[in-house]
Length: 298
Picture 1 (spheres, rainbow, N blue to C red):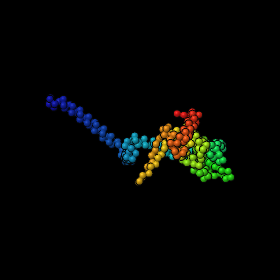
Picture 2 (picture 1 turned 180 degrees about the horizontal axis):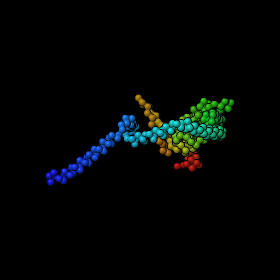
Picture 3 (picture 1 turned 120 degrees about the horizontal axis):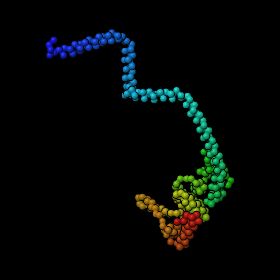
Picture 4 (picture 1 turned 45 degrees about the horizontal axis):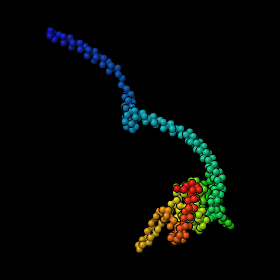
């Protein structure tokens, strides 16, 4: 070779020898490889399975594995269904026993309280012009005995439910007596016709009872009796005016002096009567003293 290319010649010969060796090794390796169509098909099927799993259960193999864990837990829960159902049935039976026991306690307490409630209501009715009325409280039905009825009986008659035996005024007074006994109730009570068929001392007793109830709850009373109106903490007069084409009702909250005038009108129909005004002032003074005795005077 020529001197300027001698070094390159040597390097090329070395590379040629290396290529020959690598070619021989590759040929030997290729001849050593044995074709396995079954293994190839298994790998292809595995890759397809992984692809299908990602498409159905998650974007990544990690998500697929997470779904597998959840599915295994759910499967275990389903396989243990009978055992869990037996546990829940046992818990249900135990809860039923506890409920029945508490229901029996409630029924016993209601039956025990019924006579005392009837006696207390009857005691208040004696002050509300219903002295001869007997009150009964029946507690019936399976425990906890939710069928509670209040019955009333006049002398010589059979006991009947309150709504069937009482007139409008008697029903209102019976409810008033009941509310005076019970400690729980709605925040606002409305009484209409509570003074029907009474007057004099009975009317004063009704007014006193309503005032006592009004210390615990808001009580609205529609009345035409001055003895009842005098005991109110606040007196509102309703005036109805009839014109040619309509009727209008006005309300007016009365101050102390206007209240005397209105009570005088209710007493005698003559608000300017000095006698009626004296009587009205006396009624207001009686109501004030009653509140002072209960410690609720303004």
